[in-house]
Image (cartoon, rainbow, N blue to C red):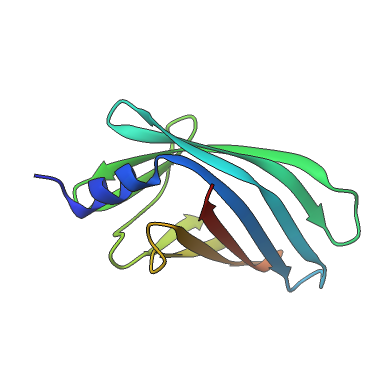
Length: 141
């Protein structure tokens, strides 16, 4: 019997167009990322690879990429760094998670209301030297 987390993971497999907006309230400069993400199966989970162009303020765009591992953990989805260290986990029906990285706080909300064609994540990051909101939109490519 499939759990909801496994159903969501299976639906993520494939290529996604990615658009990210960054509202850096400390610098007052906006950021933007445009690229693509691919989820591919690996064992019992998925490998996530993202790449594209990141622009911060008026600076020249830079190539950026990142990788994560996504897997079902009961009714939750666990997201780990590429090296296997735990990043965060969430219930896809609720979508909220926290990543503690003292002295900073990272709060994410996943929104699957446009599923299966679109979804999004929104990170609110605060700390002594951080104060930004990063919203990422995913559109099935």
